[in-house]
Length: 289
Image 1 (spheres, rainbow, N blue to C red):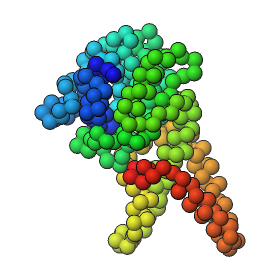
Image 2 (image 1 turned 45 degrees about the vertical axis):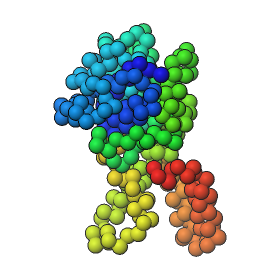
Image 3 (image 1 turned 45 degrees about the horizontal axis):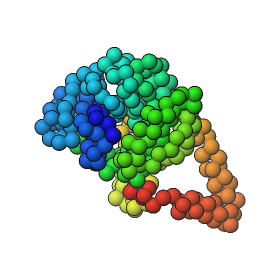
Image 4 (image 1 turned 180 degrees about the vertical axis):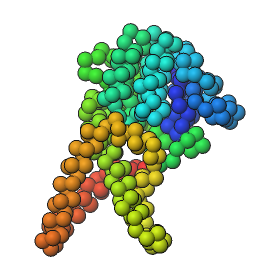
């Protein structure tokens, strides 16, 4: 599908992407830029899927048909300026950031007349991180957003990018960058911050309680184990939408509180049944997220 793919960032998402693309014969060569020398040495010595690693992003993207920025969201825009001068004219550039409006606007401005940028968001993260946790199955059965602007004429590159993510086993959805940020604030960012808020609340309680908890608490707070730095970056970039999602969620908490104050058993049961119905309709693959 692509002769050369360059991956910028060799963390969990980048390394899993490179390994999966090579195993599924979607690419000929995989080149990788990693900031740290010890990571580059490990890639060259141990990662069979990586054909070559580079010390600078500009060197890594030379000759690439597809470039995928897999760094934390706060670093993606900065990479655009570093690689623009080294890109092939028709190179396709994308990213894996979970916030899209700012990144897509910067991508369109940076690569106008030199390369083509289309935002991606494969929803395939984990509370784990790093090259050592790479898994070529990470993307299988998961959802991926593509976020082109409506006024762009990029039909052929868009189809190629869709086919690339589908080739990794993903379900692809097209939406605008702003609509993407609204949706993920509700279905991804809000759940993470709620899990973190619950864990923060319980962290103030006696530590002796820790050994008394059941599986429900561990299930509910699992994603609170994610990288705080990464989630701080997400909060900064999608702050407005996350605040709106929190405001809406507080309405649901208020309703539950009202039912409890009134002692309305029927209303409480209906509230819980609505939640149960929603949980049951989620695809079963989410149980292993």
